Image (cartoon, rainbow, N blue to C red; front, top):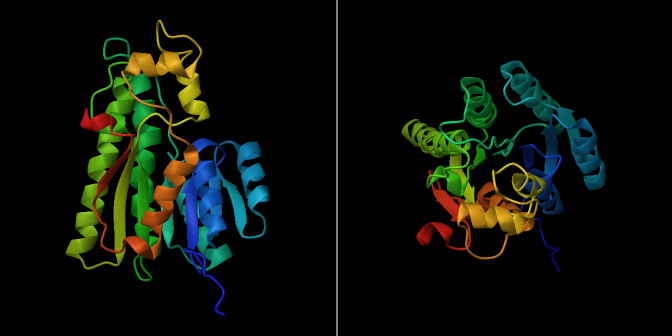
Length: 257
């Protein structure tokens, strides 16, 4: 009897923002299906804990996604340690809760630096690492990148930018016949530490997640990080060979309302 194969056997993945939330769930899920994973984050303690939980097939590297030099170092580490790169998950992100009238230029630029510049640098250097052997880039956007969100205008704008960055990268790879796919995922309300923290930041909202959802006009229950991780796994694996340049909402139907 032939033993079952993992869906990521023989593949190497790099997951940013892997210390908690969606990044942690994704790193664990990819490793569970056979991938060797470089976990990166600015949270050293959390990132090291995730790599330790995975075991010998994972390694942690501190990584500020706004730094091009640190992106180059991360790509060097993953290719030297694991022999290549087949999947890049641009997950690292922050949310600054401010309306258009309250957002300072400094806050705007910080939001763009982490969410959009970070994804740009990841795509740029990740593509170079996968140019010959092929692979999949998965960019974490948000439903806030599909519809306007008044409480966090800069976050919405940055995630909308990630959406079109993704399509441009996919078109570039198609034009040059490069064996690299690029897709974006748009989660709605997912039960993560970042989501739970929003209740304390939105004016008039309480500290609970339910208050946040009321303020955001979100319907239905919170999703789980594993729900998003399973979608990332599908897009990172060979099962999704014909999916390229797509935007996939994982929000319980929110954007259909």
